Length: 110
Length: 115
Image (cartoon, rainbow over the protein chains, first blue to last red):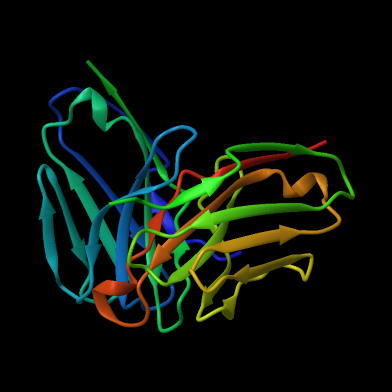
């Protein structure tokens, strides 16, 4: 099935560092979503973006909806150990389904 | 405010068997979507139910079928199980249609192992 191009595939950082990850698509999306998934659990919504160019923050997390509507990025500032997990981007076009990236595995070294 | 719930949490089946997974949406939501997540991959859309009808379907064979009940809860049925059906099955609920209401919230998933 179709998946978005999400990078990097994995990151290993020190506590306190900032993190950036992004997603690109060959298709235009109307909505971009960022989720975090812990082992054995379902994805938890972090940030939802609904308009091209939109920049939204949720605590230490900031995400932007690309102006071309084909990309989005997520930044995490001042990382902490509990940020560890897999981060997924997801986009929705004119239909109802979400298309997901393959995920970015984040490891934070205390 | 109850979130999305799924049952069972884990399930082991053998090839050729049939399985039914269940989902109760978040309070106030009327739309349920099902996803399959293989190990190391992002979730893949199976189908979405709204007003007790399948509204859209992903690239999955007819062995995968579903149902939505009047209380908005939903079932996913998989017939003639294959080894490749082993995965985490996720249910997501949302309000339909339009705008922020379509944001999907996920349950914890059902881990299916086919032997």
